[in-house]
Image (cartoon, rainbow over all chains, first blue to last red; front, side, top):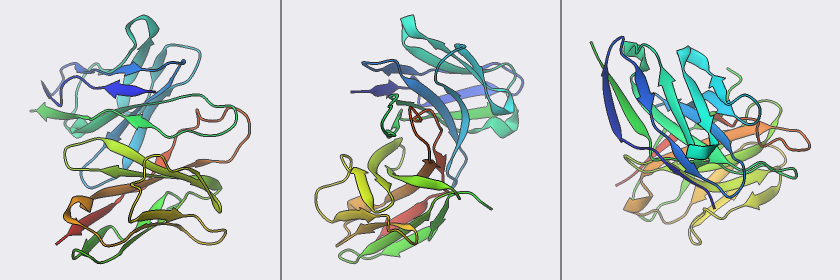
Length: 116
Length: 118
């Protein structure tokens, strides 16, 4: 079974400050990990993903995340917050499969507020 | 727009009525997933379908809910005899065709259908 825990349902930062959104996962096999962003009344947009290889992955809009197996973490960061980053962020996990796809297991989300 | 298309965007039903939610996957995608998002919560998996087949319905409530993905046309999520607790946003996602270990291909999401039960 897999699970995702996002610490902090609400995070508030000042414009230009570092953004750090935390995600810890539980998986019995090496996972595939994703971060999605959701703007109000919209669907989810993929920010970045980790499957194999380099543990530091870069995504869109200046975001990046680092897979740390020893800490079972996949925290999302951005060096300098922009007002347009205000949204809900979801961490998700799935298991690799050679025979078929698997659904995503999502965390409960973190709402990011950016103060001017 | 070649993205995942869901309709309607908003749907209002009275208790006891039926709700039908439609999802057209991205062009070239034949894998469809349905998720439900309750207020202030993350998305919860409901069902995974390929054309004419239900692959995994472990997240679907046992009663009143059904899903299909016919050979032609969109995927349909049907909720019969709706109750207030069915009020939620329902999201559809699709992913590409392929063989081998392809679960690393990200799912692409539609904008969702917001279902309100009066």
